[in-house]
Image (cartoon, rainbow, N blue to C red; front, side, top):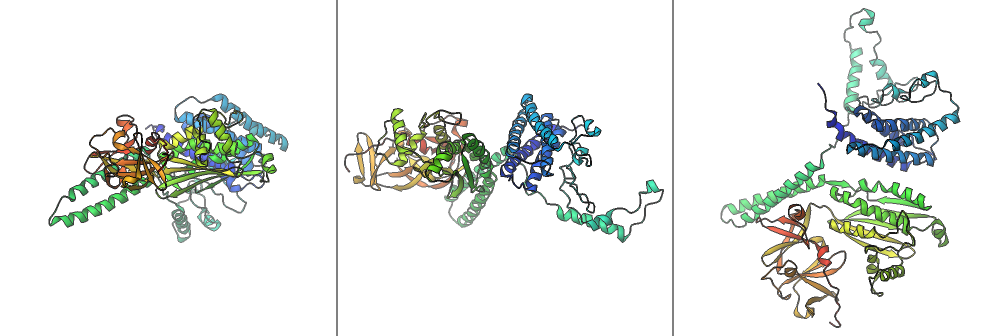
Length: 632
């Protein structure tokens, strides 16, 4: 019976990606002065696992590179190879090559054999250099290895070569200690803990098998049964069952949608129950309350399956900062805080590019050169902090540095040069937001790192596309802080339902400051535009009925409700007929089923079966005019 090996490819790709990420992380953390043996073992095991798996599936390109890399790592953990910064850099470059090759196999594309050969040559060059230092003459057996087996000393043979890439290496043992086999289950079984020397001594047969001695099998006694029971007990107690399973994200998304439908059905039943009176009313309401509680718990449990620690994204930045600071001749210490903060998987994937731009800008534009930092009395090593924390129903990701900060005058001059005509007396927070304009860059020269002005506007667009906003704080000479505010999840939103001309709209609760019914003296008209005087300032007012082109709506603000909204760009008021109530709604994409609608982020199904549009606050804010009356 033939086995279709392709069914196991997905698991191999996922596990290999994890191994490569772990290798990169451990290499970045490695102390070259005193390398941690456990870190070296972890790196070696990761390379060995990829080598073994790729050999089984016939991914020869991965096998070839990891084999040579494994030889170097084995020497490093045996203290026969002194690790240096260039060698670690070479390992990191090799990890990049392995990631690219893995992606090629995953996407069924041709691998770049030239790049692989070059990577192998660089690794073998280090091996050759180390061999020449030790002046070890290879034996005839080594010469006959045809390049398939590890180079070893004359007095020791490589255990991992005996396994042909399918078995983990035997641990180096003392003469009086038992040999421990790592991962003897070939990756399919949990490892058995090492058994003490006495147990092993008892467990080993003292007489040869009957086939070789011509004797019958000795009867079972307490002496030869006891060791077996010990082995079983050790195996049982050492078996650490896995507490997680791999599930395709498509299945999770399908489950989230089904739970969303369950929430909608529960809302429908609640509306029907409110119309029932009599003896069954109390019983029905009790049952509906219980259903609502259970539905909420199921919803929260299912949503938690989509949540991943933000460290999945953060862990790639030590490498980014290390490479970039080396290239720029700067010393930068990256500090990561709040890596365990959980966020929706969909948000994590969409935050990679914006965070990469912001971290690179902090290192390139924010942190000064060593000479400039010493001139102003700063330590030569700059600090970049990457922090995540949960605040209410939002996640706040901050990128902070102790660099030069933003230069207000330089930004204003560049804005005028670009034809933006800013108000030179505008507050700092508005000046800082000018850097998000397309084509805006204050770099003195264009490099392959930055300076073309094509990054920060993309950052803002990507963040706003997922319902977030970005704020900037800066103090010239002392550093800058970028704070990204994101919703916890993309699938469900807490919103305030408002009514306009018998139609219901949902305003995200995170953007609402308060709702009021204004008095006549609080409203001022400029041309055809309304202004609301509140909180010691004027707020532009948007008539939602005009934006959505609805008739028979309330046009007099004193008879309707104005919802005060705060977006990443502006603050404004939204005129509606009335408030329906706060509700958690499941977001359905309009673009997927219909098309993009200006001012609308999506839709949801209400309890009565009707469709309510979810407003896109950022899109509405783009149409707000900044008006200032001459007097109150």
